[in-house]
Length: 190
Image 1: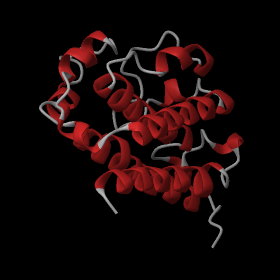
Image 2: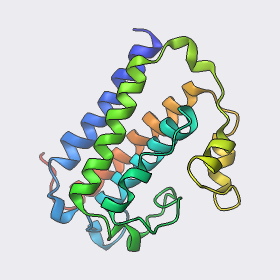
Image 3: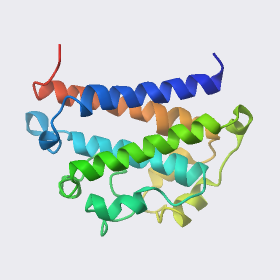
Image 4: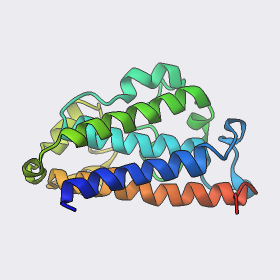
């Protein structure tokens, strides 16, 4: 298996785990619930994973406005700051505004777009280093002063790194967190 095939397969695995073991098993009516009275909600984790993947692929790599801009109104976040849901700590006030159907539509659109882009990507393109800071500021409306951790973490990275971490690794990490949340809700299928 070459690197490209591995990335396509690993992205599909992250998506499958998220949709088949969390979204399919946790009723949408419970997506805003904090298991054990604390921690992230399923809605918060879904939004967070999609926001990072959206920024990495659509904004930094492809030099487009994030898909979030097209979904913000439906998500109930039209007036939210451009960096909503990027921090690891969930903003429960913002997440509580997000409806399940709109959130699922956004997360699905992000994963669909990433899978399509990745399927068409040539392996040689993986070493290109995008203009990350410029794109985060000018395409996503972020400010380095507000998100120094994001700008510094993503600076000087090649495309392969964006696929490896913000898209795949970050998704796997939060899928694990979402599975733990599901289990603490008493919804483990095992």
